[in-house]
Image 1 (tube, protein in one colour):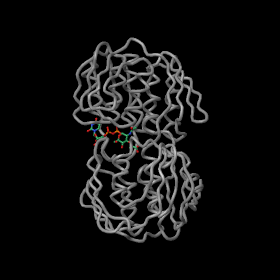
Image 2: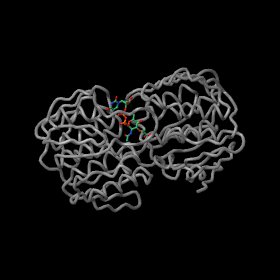
Image 3: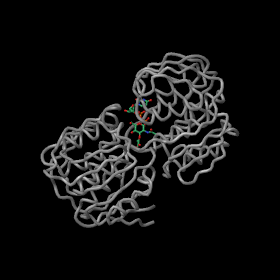
Image 4: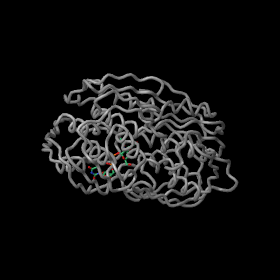
Length: 416
Ligand code: EPU
């Protein structure tokens, strides 16, 4: 088990570049299963979740080369054997194997995926959608899904990100046309659609809640570049704003940051934008509390909430937090309380933070990925030493976050 040891109170400065998106990479790597030729994916973040995902693809028979953020996946020898429960349970993204394996082989069997402990995380939207496409689903300890897929109209009961992605992948090799309504529109879903279209799929309505997929008999290999990670961009924005620092963040996709940047603006965070670049400036007035409400993209993402929540501890007045997406997202707020923040947990989805409060170092075991990043930002602000245990949870979604923050001037070391 690794831990981060942080001495707080250092200003950050310099430049940092944003990695490729974790959630886009997982979806695009899954879609390579549908190809009948090798695929070349660039800007793949070198993070733990990607490494585990590549191991799963290798276990299924794919040939993988991964170096310098480029993954070459040759899926031709993949077979739909069951994925070991131990690997499946390591990450939520493993559910993304279901759609492409089902579409390619007419059968898939898997255990329920693991991932962050942020809520109950059901998969009924995925399974109901597969059934609409004509599959037979039997759900016991092992989920078995089989059948030849036929296009259908699917109205999602909940706008699920991986649910939408699984059904797009399944529909791309189904016979006939599929319409998916109430579809998720997140940048990672758009990345997936653009990659599939590059493989010869026909998906219309990309980036809207109504997707029309014309099923194909075969999809070719393709080259694709993963888009920049919007959640990582906001992580660096929050780290700079909370420590009252000036930094430049490059490799940013500004098209996908409307809601979090509007929240930063309301909180009086000063920043300038240029194509592909964001510069967080030192404050010229106090940070201000605000209302943080998560939603479905293009609204504020649930993954961005803990990063803005930690900033609220340094803002004047009250910040209200309403995150209805997961009922287990408040682990970071409990940690912030331990570090001196004034937080009222009203119920599982609502909280109030009153600031500004000086934070002090503490020893914390991070409960989930975004909580880990949020607690790390609190430790950069805090007086004294903090220790964050379970640093691997942060490594799941951030590439060398400790090193990159150190390059910006943070005092942080990793102990294995
Ligand atoms: N939901 C259902 N039924 C389903 C699926 C989801 O009721 O079958 C509900 C969930 O309980 C939740 C909401 O729908 O309330 C949204 O869940 P969603 O299915 O969209 O989440 P996900 O696809 O499992 C992805 C990201 C998460 C991110 C969420 C929400 C990946 C691999 N994961 O998860 O990312 O929090 O969308 O935006 O894309 C992270 O990056 O740290 C992370 C957890």
